[in-house]
Image 1 (cartoon, rainbow, N blue to C red):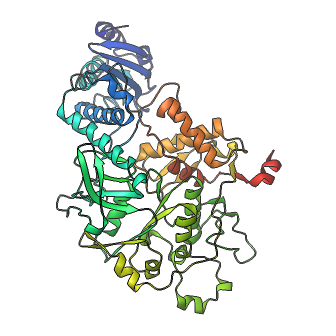
Image 2 (cartoon, rainbow, N blue to C red):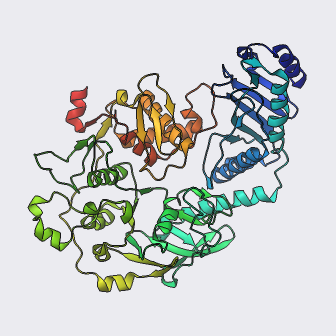
Image 3 (cartoon, one colour):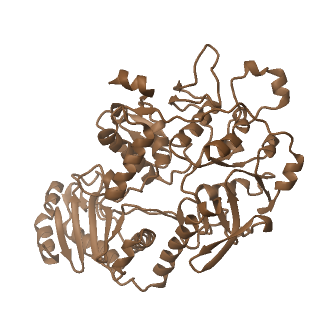
Length: 563
């Protein structure tokens, strides 16, 4: 394998030549203790940076890679340490000198940015802008960038095996996985440990609010789970229907948001590192204008005026009520066991219909069956729990199994008081809530044009000529997550969808591929990339359902016609 001297010699020869000559660097180089692998060389200093991998042996026990939680924790910590060790600087034109590696937020998830193996090696995937002036190679600057900036950051990963920070980070991830693993056996869907810090500093700063009131469970709702270092006490939210109520700005939505992200682990010091929820927790909301492709929303909306059916329902411009009804059914279709709703982001006419409106508009003229009349059926018949923030729809008091009252960020048990105030529970005739017959056509999932998939943030994905709007899919983390969802759709369209396989089965097949090959299965290139996140089926399904080219065949008769 070529070494440091060979790299220096080559870059001396390349100095001043046309930028395209940088392609001679492609391949592996042994630079001191580190191996640098240049997989793809950018063709121009203004183009996307070169894709590079760095490998170095650490003294972290290789046996940690055999435990999924430990492996996740190690890889996350190594990624953060590598990023902190980078000292890239501008070296010429365009992207020259730029070094980009995934910069994680407070969540700890499986990613493609760092791979830790059982031989103790860490592999980091990142992007580098090879230096140039104009379109001429800066050989000396390129040598400094690779042998100093990159190698120095890799060197920070070598002797970390006994660092307390690493041990604490990994132990925290293992503890969260252990707590989450005890939810179902205790009849819980979420757990918020005492002394957790739930508020964030702002909408753009996800650090814990330093002045926040530490969370403390009401005694009547307190449970104890077994953590890695002993019992952990906190609020246990049981399966069923749970309301979070209270005055405005008293912490209702903040509590719901903590539960919303509880399916993911968090770094030590985040304040939510002992807040866990079941892996099948999905936030749903209204989303005016979204496309809905053949979703059976008849449990919530009967046939519309003009004889338009809702079993299944299609539209290119959904209203608030039809979009939220579709989101509920789509989530259940893909396996969600907990739905999270916030009154503030819901369609009011889907949530509830009071007696005066029923008197003004007779039931025969109103196609909507409000969610309040279905929520108990979802729990008792379909095993789907609901946690909902309410501030003005008192009808839900009569269908709640438990009520958490928030007052100045402090929770109390309002269940008994709510039941005393509640009247009869509003119910509708039972309805089978299912949409498992939607079979996806492969052609509708393939990106148009040149087939490019791009994501600038967590709100949208450029998918060929289409844009997938993810603004209402609140459990998307960031741009890398959005990009991963786009690549997941591409893979399903290329390899899995056939017009005869229904969406849940396609998601099952995707999960099997990921188990076998990791997030690298989603790389659009022959080589691995560092900007992928292990995707959850619910966000993949949400992205698919918002793709405006999506076409499904519905039921066996449609499948036969499609064939």
